[in-house]
Length: 322
Ligand code: AHG
Ligand code: MN
Ligand code: MN
Ligand code: MN
Image (cartoon, rainbow, N blue to C red; front, side, top):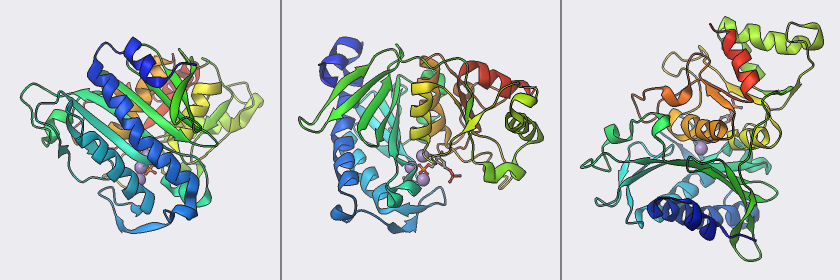
């Protein structure tokens, strides 16, 4: 049995990064505990307010955000944080070198129906002399991420992360309150017959995406020549974990529902960290036109089109957009 802290000490070149991942897990264990108590902890239901994304917040969106914020603010190496649930970046320790960006609770529409949710994080280095509350210092391409990961709260609680040298997973052992190593150097199979997309948005997609998904649905009689299966959990963490486990393609593509939001998912809290994990595991992550991690961010809450997963299938999807 290898504990998370031992693994981090042996694998992280920078002890600050090890401290951040280890420290984040204090909040995530608390979130996991509350989620598993569910109604008994009085944490289900709506918070009765909207976040900066224009989404109605669940009580657990707010609680998880506060737990992670408090935990990061106490770390000397954290200069600042940015969250899906916070209107602006928050300055922490002026002497810290790192910025932590996070989606405190991903898939939160699943909470009240007792289905898998997650926490996603991305770690960036702050520019020397930058202020932790300054949005500009966060606007770095995904390729600059020092580390990224997620915690999945499912039948068991898992941590999956990368510091740029492969993707590793850990299971929370509730008997001892520790994450223990489960799998090292996870690889996504290049080929797949499983896709994930919210089909109810079909009429809003670009014609290229309609044509690709149309061909997926044609099965072995269509130009792709195989029968596909479909899954949609409505939690990106759960979908990406399935893909890391058995392959697949996950898409939340451009749509024309709202011209101000080219896609639903957020580049800094969802697109970039998940792209780092997928690519570190040998998969591909694209907007359908360019690598997600090469998108130059212009705003902290920017949305992005997402097509990621098994490399051969993502390339196929992108080939319809050439
Ligand atoms: P969040 O709960 O953090 O706002 O994210 C929800 C995201 C993502 O996890 C999921 O893939 C997608 O939204 C679900 O969207 P639909 O509601 O369109 O199914
Ligand atoms: Mn949300
Ligand atoms: Mn999310
Ligand atoms: Mn969220």
